[in-house]
Length: 81
Image (tube, rainbow, N blue to C red; front, side):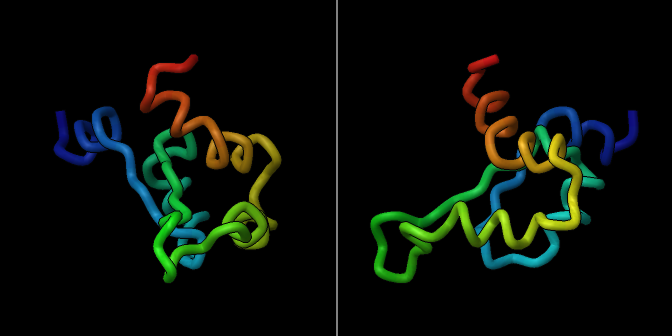
């Protein structure tokens, strides 16, 4: 098995809503393997506007990919499926 396949199967990637590469990341690892953060309660965090920031960054992605990014990664990581 290639290292990149092992990575995709076993790893999740976390990012903050200000990062602009969400589409490329979803395409590479899969939207169901993405976690996002608000960095709450730190002053430099993105609370309470993180979900809106993320939705703005994902406008070009399909509704299904958006749903997987918003919740699917966390659900898979924590075994909530």
